[in-house]
Length: 98
Image (cartoon, rainbow, N blue to C red; front, side, top):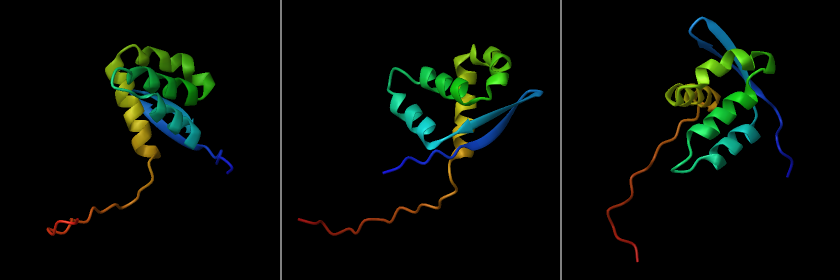
């Protein structure tokens, strides 16, 4: 199976600055695989620093000091990356199955 290496460019405006991130499915998978109950900020920080345009990394770093800002930025990035897919959960029937 071949891995899709296409990158999706997403620009976030943080205060008066714009930052462009290039995310691939592998980047997002690595992020989710790194999350655990005691480790959420580091994977978010890694996602941001590894996908931002490298010439913008120094300007991004001051925003990464506060863990809440890191989580907010990563959340905005992932929300924009997610495809628009409609999902409906069907109700189960009341009958018990054996």
